[in-house]
Length: 234
Image (cartoon, rainbow, N blue to C red; front, side, top):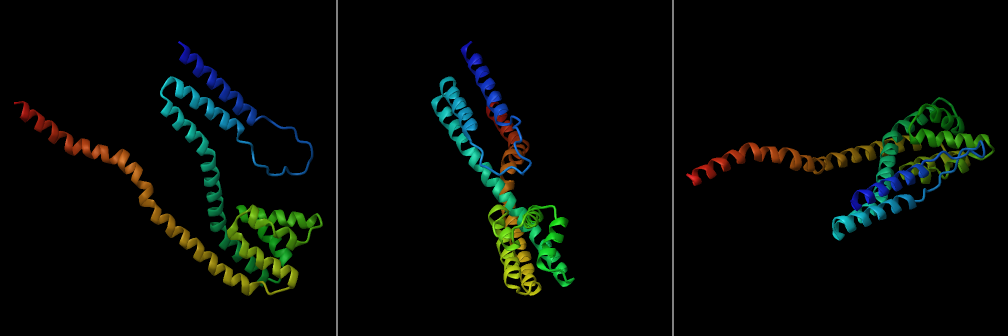
């Protein structure tokens, strides 16, 4: 009788903590909110409570395992989000470089080229370039606005940002450097695609073992085993 009550109280606590985490916040200024790391206190508290209930109701080993899983899960989600964002940058980077080359060959300077490309791309690279253009309209130099983009958008963007900063600050030619960057970015995207293709058999191993292999054993070995047992009983 006590176990359903404890589980119900635990579920109510999880719902309250989840609602408090996603509560609507009052907007104090029209400026865009700064990105701040969210405190994982609510998730850790819910994981600790679940681990304690499982340790008391089921087994201490089960409780320890659940607590460890709840502790590791937020870090794993952050790593997956970071990898997904890096992959999006690698996929979009060649198109951004080609558009910048087209803009530079059309006679636009580096400021107008960055503004034109940022308006036409919808991924993280285009968003980063558009954010840099918005900072320049507020009075920041283009090189200073582009400099923090590799840390906020992704590390694969650093060579392109270095070329754009050199063109803005020192007046270096933009198109030859972009031509080499375009080849390097396509090579990087191809290597990433080959890496994902090599990982495909490993990812297919789990559904193969859990879904196909039991059905294969059931259809092939189970009749033979049943017939053998029948013969041995006779």
